[in-house]
Amino acid sequence: MNKPTVATLWGGIGGGMLGFSAAGYEALWGADDRDFIAPDWFRESWRGWLNWYQPGMGVPPSWFSPTNLRHTIHPDVLIGSPPCKRFSLLAMRKKDRLDFDPEELEYTRFLHAVQDLRPKIFVLENLVSISNYLAVKNETGGGASLKAVENQRTIVWLPHYRVQSFVLNSVYYSTPQSRNRLYLVGVLQNLLPGDQDIPQVGYQPVTVPGLTIRDAFTGISRVPNMETANHSQRRIDGFRELEPGKSYYGSQNNRRLYWDKPGPTIASHRTQHVHPSEPRTLTVRECARIMGFPDSFVFHGPRTKQLDQVGCGVCPQVAKQIALELLPLLTQES
Image (cartoon, rainbow, N blue to C red; front, side):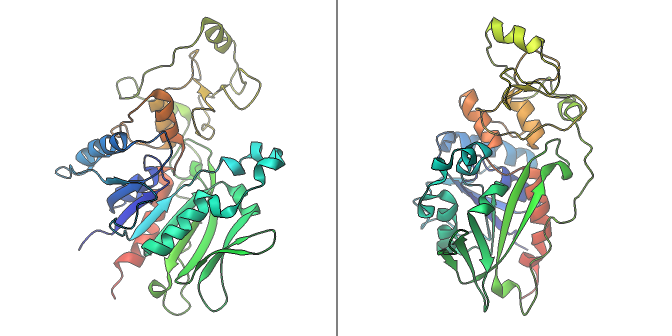
């Protein structure tokens, strides 16, 4: 039996696709136009991981621009996590930053790509707060549409899909990180005959919260991407004085982690966290451990770009569970 295939659009280095790969899907390609991910970095990261996970599978996924998807191989599953800073808590405090044209959002462009590529299933991840402004809903009589919440204007019409949205926190999926995200799953209606619903993806947590930063950092001394940042002596002295849970800046940034609790959300290089006991911010690998990347998945490029690669995407462990729960839809007999 051929493996179902997966590709990622605005998924950064491909954490979501990595989770699907771990669940037995074949990774095809990635497409993203953000500056923290380059074709060579992407291919090198994936080449190493495929060699480790499946000996002999040394050909990495291809790389495409989001504006040049027409000639790509159409995947069975398309997963993505488009840029979402416009819907962050900071942005919502600044109302002018929420004055936007929905057609210009990568979130909307992702759904237009769904129309063109017509994958059997798509998985779209974003901040929970986006649902205050945009919502994808099933329509009476079939199909689904992306609508503006304020005036119910239809922005994207998806005539062939049925959708389901839900909120998951990665802390329940063998990941030492509290990361709450909204997931939208769309399935071609012909895979859901009659009144069959989309499987209740993710509603049953795999584990109770239990993994901590101490668990995440066990045996971490001799692994890739452990280079530490160069801090000024003033910052080093300031970090030494920090109690767990306290911030060097008095904000969410540069906050010291607790050894025996899960970590906070790993985001971009703009929001870094301080090691539980050392006077420094976390390394790329420490962030990757918290996010759920295997040590064999090596990151490339400047340090700040690597931090963005780790945090700007889908948590691999959560994606793996979604992939496993959707697999029966792709392997059922015709």
